Length: 155
Image 1 (cartoon, rainbow, N blue to C red):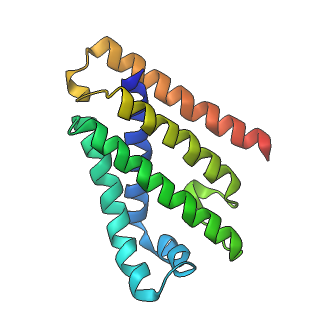
Image 2 (image 1 turned 60 degrees about the horizontal axis):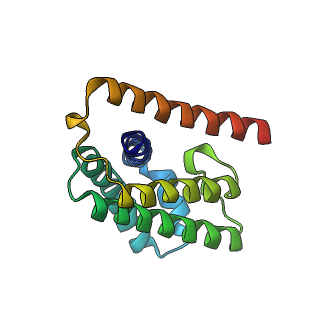
Image 3 (image 1 turned 60 degrees about the vertical axis):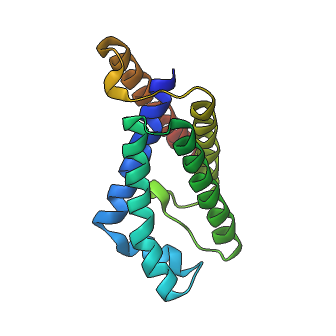
């Protein structure tokens, strides 16, 4: 189970970081609703790098409890930003969302996953047996599909 949660968190962070790095303008616009232009510009560079680094550290199994704690802290910061965006009537467009309620729920679930990993670290994923890793990947992909289906049905 820890490998599945690790894959889910690492995949989510990698996807989010890569999307922000590839096209930082939308993220910068969101940040401008929360911070000054200079701070938004710096965060638009730093946050994707942090997300990608945390994803790599999760997969590598480096200091897994510390990394899981950092992931939880990052998700808490994102959730606080979502609450603040709601107060200023701005949308984050996180993973294409037009409102932040779903994003806050997603962050809560991912934070629960990070807490699970802090308690039961997965270790380096390349040290996991191939069959177990394939099962973990299937579970992680299934969780993503369930989330997407739930989001689609809620609309």
